[in-house]
Length: 471
Ligand code: FAD
Image 1 (cartoon, rainbow, N blue to C red):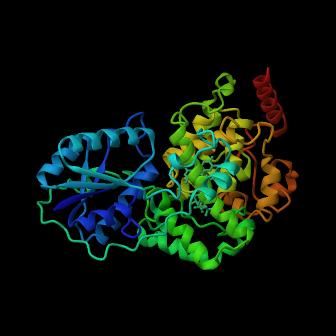
Image 2: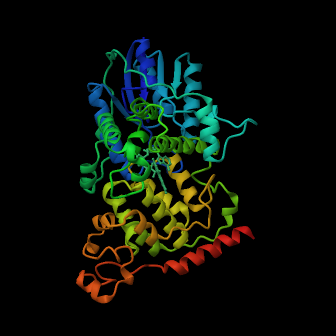
Image 3: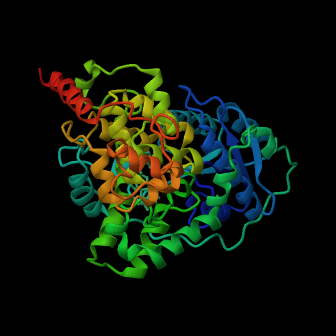
């Protein structure tokens, strides 16, 4: 019998439970559907589309050109494809965005009513959200008990599967709309710098994982906080698109380092746990991307300030570590986690702009833009989330810069106009005496902006605003 293998956020051949199950049944037709009907304006952002294009192209090569690509609503397309391919069944790995869950349920129901087989598997999470609950049957809201008492006690994550011994493709007409019909690549050529840094696809993911294990894993605990160092695994876009499963990452680490008590290894595994927690929150609290988790924040006096928002987006706030981060994002489609927290705190606290503004900008510009991780993280930064940063923790971007980018290497890389400024002033150029600025070839307000807010005054303004939540 012929089965359809519906690839979604699992663009890989290794450790792909749905693909294995489909191949066990016999011949397959591998398909991908670009769902341009995704509701709530949640079409992938520009950076994600770029990645998706290259990832699909890479998967198609692995499948010897057999991937059939369509554009449209899967609810109408799939029943038609089942018929035209004369398929008996369809296999997919589950996705967890609320609209995807509803859509997939409907598709499954329709197919089963028409006596087709429809099977879904878990190919994206170490622990599926419905399996981890508190004793009273309600979901966890705090990370540490969720991870330690929940996940780690529930079951060991599944060991990765070997790829199918053989993939036999059904001999069907190629009805594919083709990759180019999806129109995922930008019309303006902004992707040259991104292309240099990233290799979308299963091989690129495996390379990053191997490189991380070899060079950075043992030093992760401290290395992960230094934005100029190559201290993290840079697997996030690969994980988002499922070019590697979290199980492959988890066991690549465990197999290499054993059940190590090493803090670096533990910390890295728990970061995978944060990814799980984000999906968990989105599953149990599906309004996470749109509504404050903590309702108190519904009355929060966010400002609107288009000029300040633009300065933040473009990396022209006059605060070097913030600008370096925002420019890293623009140029490479990625931003280091430490700096994401700094630019986030600056936006929602110093500028007092809503976390939704940050979430939207990241959605469009991050290669790893992910509904679960992005909304959970932004709510964490704003203080409105589950297990969030306390509102009174307002990062001081000068101190953060001086601590995590001591020599200013990261700032100099992305704000080259500050290159000649000494380490002492690299994170606070406005405090430099005019002779020093002159020597470094900088006139504030010309080569590099003056700060768009006073850090001390804006910190107080934020504390006052947060105080209103208590009243
Ligand atoms: P590593 O340090 O090597 O971590 C390994 C993996 O663990 C990551 O690839 C990621 O899948 C997961 N992970 C690590 N930290 C987190 C975290 N805090 N939350 C959830 N998962 C985590 N991550 C995304 O994947 N997509 C997003 O859209 C996203 N938006 C964010 C927005 C803000 C404001 C903040 C503060 C963080 C956001 N993160 C997001 C989380 C984190 O910054 C990235 O996952 C991480 O920087 C990716 O780099 P890496 O793969 O080298 O991470």
